[in-house]
Length: 358
Ligand code: MRU
Image 1 (cartoon, helix red, strand yellow):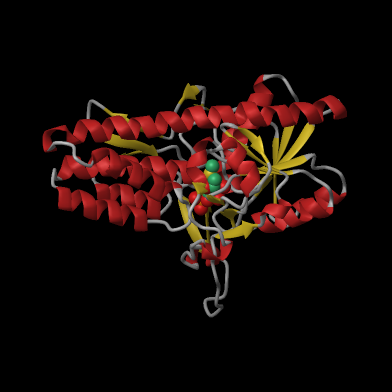
Image 2 (cartoon, rainbow, N blue to C red):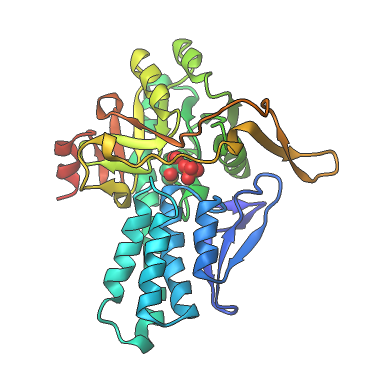
């Protein structure tokens, strides 16, 4: 995707300096800062404090985390311990474990002097695969937008929650990829961007990247989607997911479930876009999905630019008030119109997923 006209990915290996580069997402949209990850601890911290976030990008960062661990200490115990620490860094997105497991499997039985090369190649392969998958998600989801446009013959209004965009993946995004493809094809699209409290990934990241790609979008408070659907101003919803169960239930950013309920009540199609790396084939009961609970400072404080263009954090709640900060919720499959994957679109169900993924 482009930032000020220049093509970027969200993570890449700097061959010259032998470091991993990321875009520090905690500073967006106010400052565009490229940061070096030099150690596995840097990678773990970047995931924890959400300098990188979004399920596929967390997976890509974890893969490079293993590379950094090998560069620090070519020792199997250290690499193993690092892999466990990486998996612990955030609990809900399954891509994290998926990527670390894939890396460790690839490394098993490899000679010490080959470890770094094999790991680097595999981390790059994981990222390349994600780009391809997200591009295919876009081409598959495009068909839905085209259908709506054919019938409506007017601008297609799409609502999205959080950031399942370019910044949440390596490139393209999941939920945004069909939107980018539709825009490239000349279909007029407009995106309702849920602000996504408390961290405002919608307002800070989704709107930012849509602006850079010149896609019309409007930020709305998280509770606005319902009335817009009642007014017929939403043609479809597309969101991402951090973990998709084989049953078709999807865990995604807190508030997704309420949007799905409103969509059902108003007959608005509600699609979830995902690469297969987000599918957890092991859990059947959504209550078993670990739901991340984050620091309540994310609720009680907000960050923004002051008059000197400095990023400042201010408290908005009474100091004495208690708060709770659950980061994800689960949308049961019955509210999902379809899953848009790299292999095609399927029903959100065991049968649907099995048809695409043998
Ligand atoms: O807490 P975040 O910002 O990592 O949450 C991100 C989301 O909820 C995304 O929708 C999800 O990871 C899918 S990203 C393609």
